[in-house]
Length: 359
Ligand code: F6R
Image (tube, rainbow, N blue to C red; front, side, top):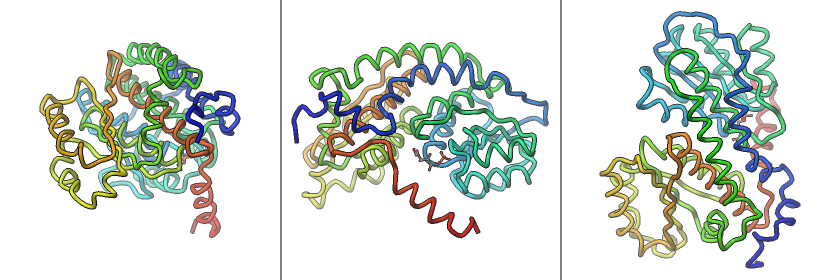
C-alpha cells in the first residue's frame, strides 16, 4: 500500500462515489439547518400529558434516538427509549411521544412500529425524506419533518437527531437547544479544518488513527452517560464505511466481564486495536477505571489509542468524538481500497426481504 495514500486527495474524492467526504465537510451546516430550518413549520397540537418518549428506527436512523436518550438522561423529566424493532413495548400509549425515524421512509421495521403507534394512540412525529412513511403520515394527518434527500442515512445524523431536540424544547422538556447547537456548529467547523482530507497525515489525527486500525480489529470503548452512543456509532461507521468488523462496549460495565477476556488466544488479541473515548464529564471513578483497564490490557493487544472529546457543551463534545470516528472510518475504507459510501449488503438484504411483498 502507498504509505501516503490518504494524502492523495484527488484519489480519495474519486473513490468516494456517494460523497461521504462532502457530507462530512457539510456536517456543520447540516446541524445548522437541522436546528433552524427543518422543524420550522412543524405543528404540534395539544394532547394529553406525555410521560415517556420513544424513538423508533434502525441503523443510521436510530443512532440519533440514542443520542437523544443520553442527552436527556440528566435533563429530561421523562424517560427516552429507543426501539429498533417491528414491535413497540407494551407501555406505549396515548401518553407516549413517538418519533418514527427513517431516512428512506421505507424501512419495514419502522413502518410496522409506526402502525402500532397509531393503533396505540401515541402522539407521533415522523422524520423522513419521503417514502412510505411520508405517505402514511400525510394520510394520517401525522406531523412530519422533511429531511433533505441524497445522503446515506448514516451521514444525516444531524438532520435525524437535532430536530428531535427542537421538538422536545417546543414541548417544554428541555431548554437552551439553540445555544448548544450554535456552539456545536462553530466547533465542528474548527474540527473540520483539522480532519479534512486536505490536512496531511502528519497533522491529521483521523488519518493517523485509520492507519493504526488498518489490518486490525477495532474495539471501541465509551463510558456510560457520556460517550456510550459514540462508541456504538464508531463501530457502525467502521462496519458500514470501511466494511470491516468492529466491536464496542462501555465502562464501567466492561470491567465486569469483557476485561476478563484478554488472556487467550494471544494471536487473536494481538489483532485488536482498542480505542478509548474520553470525555471530561466521565464519572471520576470511570476515569480511574480507564487508566487501570488500559494498564491491564495494553500488553495483550495490538495497540491502544485514546481519543478525547473537545468543545465546551455536551453536544459539541459528543459530536467532536462522532466527527473524529466518522472521518477515521472513511479513511479506513480508502486504506482498504474501498468506496466508503455504498452498503450493498444492506441493500441486498432489504431487496431479498421485500421479495415476498413484506408478508
Ligand atoms: C445506511 C445506514 C443504514 C440505514 C438503515 C435504516 O447508510 O446507515 O443503517 O439507516 O438500514 O434505513 P433508513 O435509515 O432508510 O430507515
